[in-house]
Image (cartoon, rainbow, N blue to C red; front, side, top):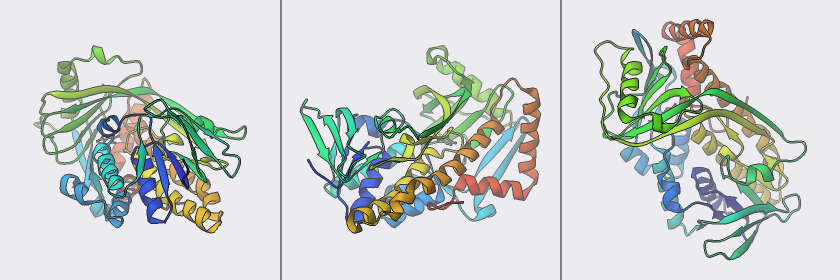
Length: 393
Ligand code: DHB
């Protein structure tokens, strides 16, 4: 098989990249190790930044998002005895949308089907070869057990942190930056109407808690738990009781509604950045190149920003043999990645509890400062609701 761009990974980054490339007149083949049902069902975060929504609107992929997503003007931040609302719309004139990554991936998959995009699911033994030449290729075994080779002009790794592209793009000069955080999140999806109109980020001496949602009938909630927590140790009753303790402390009289838990899992938290996001003719986008801690839900938005920058750069490289934008991709994308990493780590450190009582006092001072200083609130709003897709500093 031959194509212009071979894309590894059919998550939101890979699918959106193939969509954008086509609009620039570049053809691609997407390969994915999982089944389509798995990719479309996995539960991920659900916040779209202002500029991610603008991009989806520009390319006409916002119908379902506007019909089924929810526009949120801000967030609640709380600690025992206090709940404050940060109104992003009022502070900076931008808002965010609650729309599950699961739904967005399904929308993108349908759009690719309508355009006749070739997506090969359930491939195995995938590797990238010859990316230091002008003729890179992806080698794999398809679902029938047939070995295949996809020759391309460029390969893009959109295959997340466990895919083969991150390692394939690692050269002797590659730098990896990482930080493991000393806590995890226990996340649940529950069949119950949200007890709040907008997200609640809660600081509590027993640990951070977050009340998010997916629809008028489905809530998404998270609890800070120690690393190595076993999900079997957390019965549904224990989860609801801990969520109630941590979330009800902010506003006396407010109660958390519970309901059947549809899915629960423990998510380790870490931060990772690979520099550069490229090795020869293999480029990385999204989680393949960087992971942010989940507080603030930046991961999906960063993946969208990466591919929005990469698609036109690859088009000029392939069609006009002009490599300037493709050569600038890694440095420019990394500026946005580090901006969002700094913000996500700061949000995480402001809200998560560890043994350090001094830090606990600093956290409370920081939260009160956000309540009293419009400048501080505006700074958070700008980072949370999102920077322009093409942000560089
Ligand atoms: C969600 C996840 C996040 O990490 C966050 O900061 C907000 C919302 C979510 O899954 O809805």
